[in-house]
Length: 139
Image 1 (tube, rainbow, N blue to C red):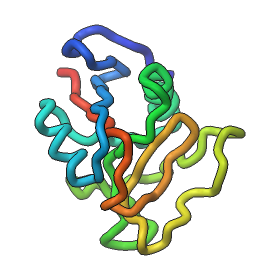
Image 2 (cartoon, rainbow, N blue to C red):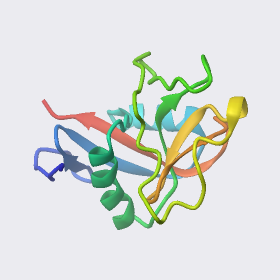
Image 3 (cartoon, one colour):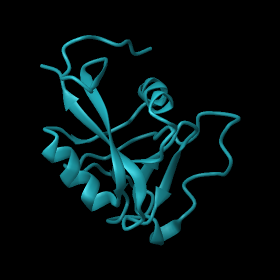
């Protein structure tokens, strides 16, 4: 289980060895990447159920948003990779009974990731969500 720690800039939430911030505003994946870089971080990489569940509490505290997160399977359908090219294994797609559909469901037309308080979803990379989840690693 992840715990909240101090050491993050104001407006960022500390979870394990990273800080997370929700950057609000309508944006697609490309805009989300730039927004997180402008904030001094990167589009969040969420790779475990424990990390997802900790971040879920952050999303609940800022109005239950759909946010862009890092991950794409544009290169090879079903093989999710980060912006840096790392393969993402065993993505935690659904939280539980609150999930309303089975993901991933978009085939080759939906190659980017989003997250809300119930689950991950694959989306078109040009789809506009309500924000971006930015990450900054604690040193």
